[in-house]
Amino acid sequence: MGIEAQINTLERNSVAVNNDRVLDVRNLRVNYHTPRGPVRAVNGVSFFLKRGEKLGLVGESGSGKTTTALSLMRLVQEPAVIEGGEVWLDGIDLLRLSEDEMRKARSADIALIPQGAMNSLNPMLKVGEQLRDTMRAHMDGESQSAIDAHIINVLDSVDLRPTVMQAYPHELSGGMKQRVCIAMGILLRPKVIIADEPTSALDVVVQRQVMETLGRVQSEIDASVILVGHDMGLMAQFVDRVGVMYGGKLVEVSPVREIFKDPLHPYTQLLIGSLPTLQAKEMFKGIPGLTPSLFMPPPGCMFHPRCPKAMSHCSVEIPALVEIKPDRWVSCHLYNGGHS
Ligand code: SF4
Image (tube, rainbow, N blue to C red; front, side):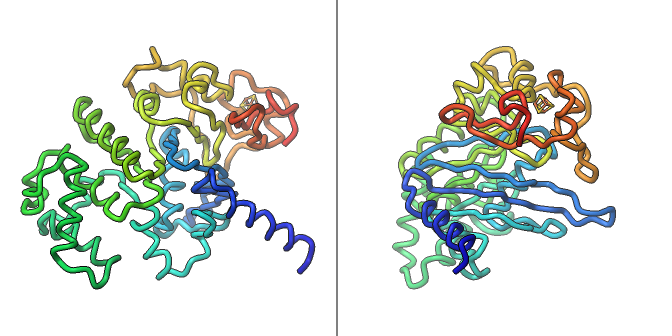
């Protein structure tokens, strides 16, 4: 084995034995192949998720947050292609599993509550049948009564009665449908739950109730959560750390309190500055200027055309994401002396 391969193996083993981290994403790259050329939707994203932690991924539309989330589950659809990187879940690189192995890992180890989840329920099937299908796909040989008993327990944990099993989705309110989707996500007690804008279609009161339910069951089954969204108020209430995405890259990852109190990256500063208070539940209002073209991204730092603090070398050198103090990661030349 060459020295480079040995170093790679050592690095991978170190991921495998790092018990604090349930998920370790390294240099994830996803392109959309279009007739105009490749679009770098996710461009070298690296982060980790601690056990029991809730991590928020935020950013404007097109920042790559949803594509990142779907890539962790290997659910991106053509023309999107995962070009490279590693997604270590408890010592196993999901990107190297066979399709069959990955199918088994989905729901059992890493589950997704997708965007518009309530509309993803099959309108033709009763809720109970849909939940049973998920169970059967992973638990061959279990008796129907054991499966139903488990489903009733899980429904109870999301504050739904057993009678919901007999209902068709259209007979349920939006909040109830979203609870069914959470139940589906936690049915097999996954280690990681990815929730992509899980409450975007709900009113504020129901949104809060659904998030409280998600937080409670997450701690009951000791899962970790990645919450994808653009509502900074929701992030402030729910997550432990926030990762801010811009132009397919992570530009800052910090504990939630610190990111609101002392945002480091100029883009994060503008995001936070657009909110009236820490507890606000507003969508952020946007940043002056246009989001970068991912066909022809600007050279150097992607944010430099909009950045009020840009320096001359910002349009030349790409800043790396570095930990400038404990648990505070930022990708900006203001903090690393202009060197990537
Ligand atoms: Fe602004 Fe330069 Fe930092 Fe980019 S690297 S965010 S342009 S200061």
